[in-house]
Length: 325
Length: 305
Image (cartoon, rainbow over all chains, first blue to last red; front, side):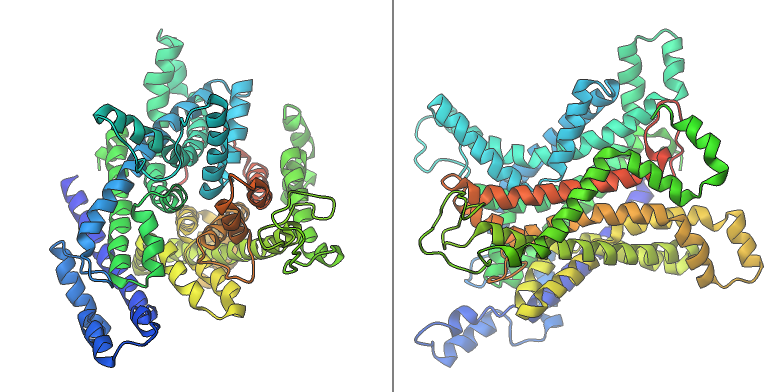
């Protein structure tokens, strides 16, 4: 297992390096970070422009630029933005913001999705199963940016019906938040609910669909009948034997789910005004900043690969047949 | 569904697989309705605009931010443009992109998956490594960088090519897995010993046997591709103004979603309807082509790998 993981990890590092190289080349070829200076009126003197170009390494060939960037990146220094701020500081701050969303979203999404899907399978073709099936298909067909807006519209109704500002939908905190730690926490929670729910909803729908199918597959198998015949209660047979087996394929799904969440976070953060990685993507492309995009590439690539690794480990924990290898 | 076994047993010898699949699909009423709706939407969005009183670019200064009226069925936006005409225009773009991307990406997936699975060895390792790489590369960012820089007329073409280039990877892994299990089957081995060339075996024996998964994949990919395109356009990285797609329309609506909800609700509703129908058709095709994939409590399904 250790050797398998080590080889896997090495492959991941090579992939990550190559992905960042490709992105770096593409951005260096297409971005013109000097535009903001050149388009200024009156145009700044050529000396200033040349100095900026030298500062941004633009006078060197792209492979050299990448080598400079990569040697810094390995040591945790991702260079500076076009305007001169260090990328690393911003990166860590934004990762903190995004991780809060993505982590809570994926945990809530997976757990609720699995429970809902298993519930649907146990009550196959009853009313609750039909409602769950229709709802999950509907949610899967709705893009994140539509879900977010519909939730905002719904929250607005709830707020005006209750007469208080129960749900907040802009930013992470209120700018005028006052009071002690408790009031601050409540304020943050009020802001957290809608974006997290937006992200979680899609994973709930996805997981419940697959979990329902996997669970139905398992429920028809002989070992469940054996377990029941040996005198286990229905509940015990379903949860101890059925659910555990049906969870195995979900491990693979989890890896793909995380990468979908990272993309979904772009829309969620943009609509709810959170200053996380997703919003940074849009800003980085708009301000033509190679270093920002390269840093994001490393982050999103690492997240996807780590999720893949994690799903392999979960797979091995759940499925004894894999461990034999 | 309960009368199905008797029927199929009685007629099995006389019915070709194609007829059988068609009959199974037609029996699934939801999928048929979804296919009809999709067809109506596709024809409607191209056929309807010439008969409408307003073009998608017309500005009506006497009707700014108007709720739906008999003159403007979907209302108007802040510039006084008719939202019905705009939504139809957006549908044209989104449907065109979705369908093209689905076909191209499934073709790539079939080719790569069949080659990797059939030949194995270094070809398999190289292709699967490329798949891994493309899964790690942030496709969303790359497309967002390239598309706004393309010429106005070529934007749609570039979007189609780029979206297709980044959406075939997972399906190709499925095709590869199925091909690997087909490779050692008797009919393939027999063909090989009869001297049939490798390419001919792939085209004549492998691809028809994975056709069901390819058809399902195409249908489901239409929805995925439309979601990707509208997502990019929503952020301003896809279809560029003055042209519109459902994504740019929804982005317009988002800005005033709490005050003028119809600007958001109509394009969003159409988008959800399209993707929902594409998914329902895909599910219906899956049930018709591969009845064993439908979870039947009495049957044990062997996982293919």
